[in-house]
Picture 1 (cartoon, rainbow, N blue to C red):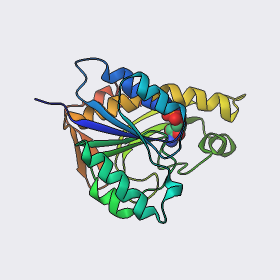
Picture 2 (picture 1 turned 30 degrees about the vertical axis):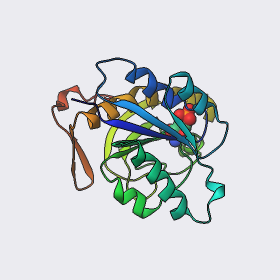
Picture 3 (picture 1 turned 90 degrees about the vertical axis):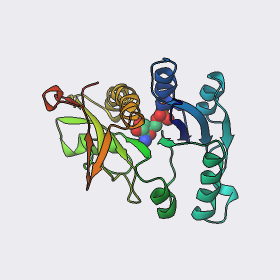
Picture 4 (picture 1 turned 30 degrees about the horizontal axis):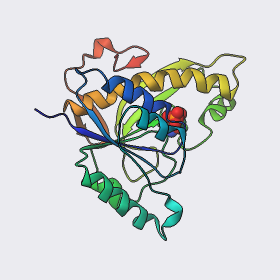
Length: 216
Ligand code: GRF
């Protein structure tokens, strides 16, 4: 049976893309990276994809008159290569409601905070300023609302007394690279069931849950 085909949308350095590339290099991994699209020309993520032999496209959003027109082109490019699942990996564009709805249940995002806390930008500084003791990252299914949607995987890290936004970001990023390939694997295996706001993972025992849930 052929594996689900994944399109990855990026805007920058692409370290999460690299984590997916590395995971998918294992023949046992249940998904295949079919296309990488950047809305920003010349970013390092594109180099990573090319090095891994994955086709790339650059679609500058600035060339479009509206968000909807940009999203329609994205959609057409993804469908042209028969993408089944989309992964947003540091993709810094809001997607229109029609696009999110069309890919509902088949689009993942990684967010550098324990949602629903700290949606949006500057999550690490906001976590420090709020004085939380645990921070982390979330992979969730995308809905039309920003950084919302059923949570597939989360990982927590401690916030240390002398942390800066940079040191905290680095600690969180290690966990992003761990849970994003895990969440994509679960979705690709058809083990993610959506029940209202919840994503329920088939075959994942609650006893495995500790600081990383689901444990991978
Ligand atoms: C990550 O922290 C991701 O959670 C956020 O943007 C950053 C992208 O990093 N959405 P990279 O491009 O994957 O290295």
